[in-house]
Length: 263
Image 1 (cartoon, rainbow, N blue to C red):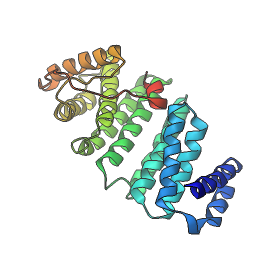
Image 2: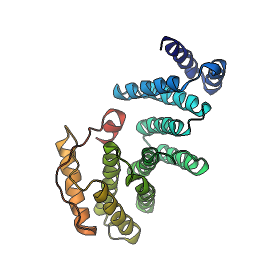
Image 3: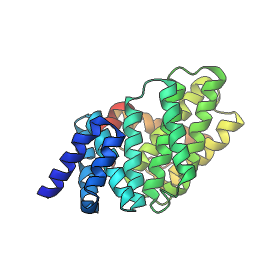
Image 4: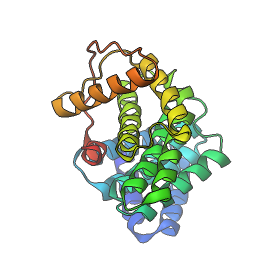
């Protein structure tokens, strides 16, 4: 453990000086790279998220990704890469910021076999892609551009349905449901909810969520969010499939950078 701390310090010291120096630092200790070292970097990512430290989280996710990737642990590498995209998402502000992240993430998903082993891995990526599209929509897009971003968000969510059915991670179900409801509410406010591009996708997503979480989703410590999501799900279920029971189930608080953005 002490040696791992020393190795991580070397990598953290190199990180601010750019990719080339980080690569050289990793190469210098290549013989000492282990899954445990990468996992320790990932733990530092989680700690940075909890203290709202975007810079620290970005460094930790980058280092974890590089080590996991060198070791050939592709699923772990992909999760660390999604962590890295997530930090960029949390500090993004403009439509272009969100669009750039979504484009790069889409290229990764199209070009590599990352995310094929674990439902959680695949679902995380698709929800993040949908979130990027939704926030691009909310960050200044107007008219047809706004509609196109909402459609893109729905497409990413539909891509995630295959993983939603298999995941047992309640936090991911909450995130998927929040994003779907957010898109639905904008469609309602704009009078687009009945248009074919929105209606067919929202119907399919409503069915998927009701199957994955037939009971009421609870957001501990956030009664307003719990009530808002519950009311929207009841509307969606009434509109599309009438299968929402509204019985209560436990949930998890959306913490760290993600919770702040979603707040």
